[in-house]
Image (cartoon, rainbow, N blue to C red; front, side, top):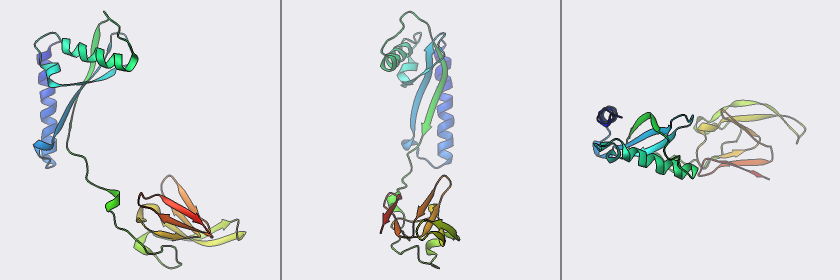
Length: 191
């Protein structure tokens, strides 16, 4: 393995990642760089992702640091190492990232006004209304339909109501109330 070529490739990937982040106005002091090699014993069909440091690929030797890191990670995952079996690197990855987002669900606006009164379309969350069959009162009831993603923390949904989202529908029965809690879960209370 030509470690000089590997180091040059890692440096090039890191420089490209840093360039892209700087285009997004990420300060260089906030950049985090991780190096990972996907390695395996020759002949195996499954790779092990091995986190590396710069010093693991900086040595002038024949990759003893790489072999050592692979052996530690392989043993951690599988409880043993196959001594004497050649090792190969399948992929080199350099992950260059900036700080995570500072968005917090708890920071979103709170709405304490009821959102289930007929004709009341608080914050635009009402999509419309349609007839929905309920066991009680054994028939169809004109029911307000809400867009889930537009409901804010603290929203109170008076039944009957339907709350729609892409993968799910929540039905708030005629004798129930829904509350969007601080975690944006819809908690339904039966009356």
